[in-house]
Image 1 (tube, rainbow, N blue to C red):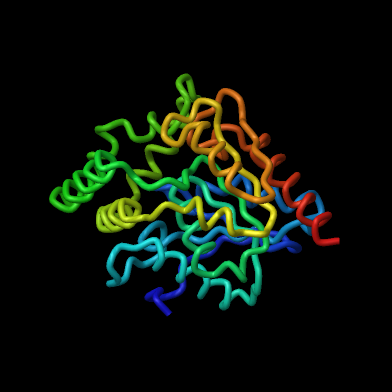
Image 2 (cartoon, rainbow, N blue to C red; image 1 turned 30 degrees about the horizontal axis):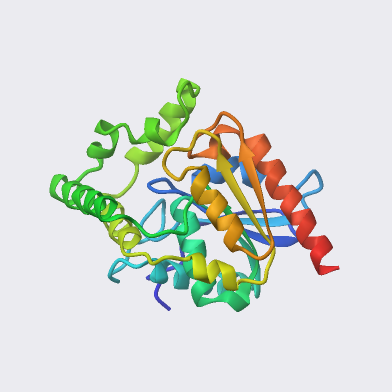
Length: 267
């Protein structure tokens, strides 16, 4: 077991286990709209589980060195605790990176995959250097004000996004622990190319991307969809990187359509 203690987990509904993994540098609170609506009117279409990833929200950081493999192993342990043998993983941005690490390390526990506003390709040298710059700066400052100063919330959202949503994302970012921010940045910087791992998966998948996502743009989504053996690609119009927050109804509809396809696939 790599997790120092069990993270706080938000959960709703029954049915197909769907584990949603949050973006950087947010927490499982970003999935409130999915926890409420994805299970369906009767609540029996899906068991939606939203854990805080290591160091974020109420989850402790622990002493392990930065690695998405560690985060993936945390998730396998969580599934054990919840009595879930196989799950559909849905990850947005950093959550997608963790989902792909899980697919590499625990493919037998994967029933399906939803990759939203993420990428399978590794960082460029420039991107890795920027992550290290941010990691070092937040640790030196002892706070995450740098992320606010550099307009992280605005960069994650489409231009013209409702100011209330921008403020909500900014507040969520401000709650992040600087040590967790640094750990996650270094873990993401070290991630490998996942296209080969995606190509080896035999489970159904869905790829979702915001039309105006500049962080992980359409080309990255197309690459993942092409690599996967059984994937459908959904582009959500007029939204940016945080598509599940910017257009929750459209995002939820895409996830529910995937869960329906998954059930048909298994019947």
